[in-house]
Image 1: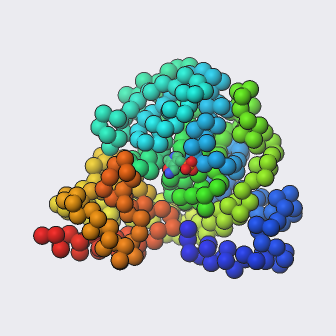
Image 2: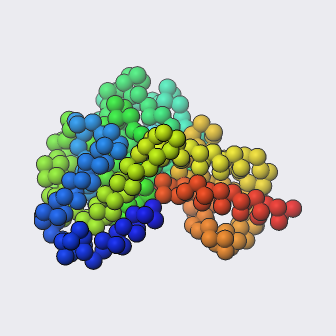
Image 3: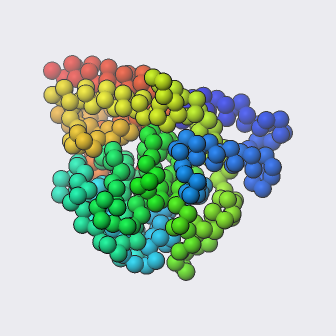
Length: 355
Ligand code: PMP
C-alpha cells in the first residue's frame, strides 16, 4: 500500500468527511458509501481506460473464487481453452474442470514454467467458450507483455485474463480482452475485494448452478450491491486509485507513469542479477515479470543467512514461494525505486561477503 494512502485512511478513520462515521460504520446503501463506490468505479474506469461496453464489478472471494465463477458464468458447461504458464493458471484449470470441459491449449510445464509458449503454437479449439490466460504468474515470475490477439490466431473466443498480480501496473488492451479478474491485494488495496471487468455481451449466460451472488449479470444489474460489498476494501482501493491518478513519471501520468516506473524498477534488479555470478533468474528474458522477480543464490546453503541479513536491513518478505524455492522480490506499484535500490545494494554486499 502506498504510505500516503494509509495516512489518508488513518486521518479519515473515525470520521469520514464530517459524516460522523467511519467508513466501516456506514450503511452500504447510504448516500456516503454510494459516493465512495461511484467515485472508485469512475476513477478505475478512467485509470485503466475501460471502454463503455465493459462493466466493472466489485466482488469477493479473490482470484481463487473467480477460478470457479468464470466457468460458471462463461463456459455454458462446454469446452474452454487454457494456456498454462505457471502455478496460478494450473490451479485455474483444475477448478474449471469441475464445471466444464477445460483443455490445455498450450503449456510451459516442460521447462518448469520459465517461458511463454508462442501464441502461434497454441492449439486453440474453435468452439471454446473462452481462453484463459494468467497474464502475470506471481509465483513463477512469468509475465505476458503483449496480450495475444485471439482473432489473429483464428479464434473467436473471448480472452479471460487473471491479472491479479499486475493490475494497474501497465495499461490493458481491452480490444483483446473479454474478461479480466484479480484480487485487489497486490496493487489496488487490502484483501477482500475482487475486481472483475467484463464485456457486456458475456453477461447473462451463467449455469443454473451458479450462486446468484456470483452471477455476473446479477452483480452488474445491482451495481455491485446485490449483497453487501466489501465496503472498507472498496474505500481503500478508491484512495489507491486517486493516488495512482496523481502519479507522474517523465511526462506520463496514472497507469502509464506506473508502467514506466515499473520497467525501471524491474530492469534495475534483473540487470544486477544477470551480471552476477552469485544470483540467477531462470525465466526467459522476453517474459520476465516486472512485479515478481524470483531469484536464486548460487550457494543455496546461504539462503537463511541472506534472509536474516535482509530482514536486519529492513528488506522483508523475500523468501521464495515454497513450490519454487530461493527468493522472490515483489515490486508492486507501491514499492518505490529506492526500495529496489536498497535491495540491490544489500544483494551486492551479501555477495561480496561470500567470496
Ligand atoms: N491468481 C494470481 C495470479 C495470484 O497471484 C493469486 C494470489 N497470489 C491468486 C490468483 C489467488 O488469489 P486469492 O488468494 O485472492 O484467491
